[in-house]
Figure 1 (spheres, one colour):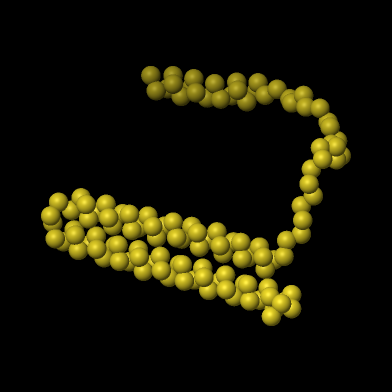
Figure 2 (tube, rainbow, N blue to C red):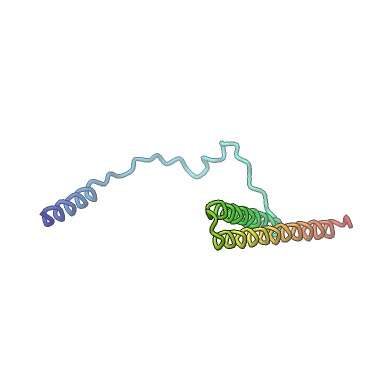
Length: 125
């Protein structure tokens, strides 16, 4: 029975490979997008792009820290009076809170440094 299934599977795969139909797409040319009234991408300063990447990264890390705090709270609520589980949950919550403080501090420092350097470059100091 397995030989029959193997032969049938190979036959189905082979027939599907033979049955490939060529695509009948129309050539619209390379200048098709000119008439779509699209906005041209602006040049982005590499420093500004790195700042945006760091901001998104800090936001992501902040979300992870909040999830860790929520996990610690869930573990505390489901400890059912077990002191070892409660102590573990407290440690998780404290670690998440410390991580959140570090992330928010780093975000504030980065924002401050970027604002100072932008003011220094533009001559507004």
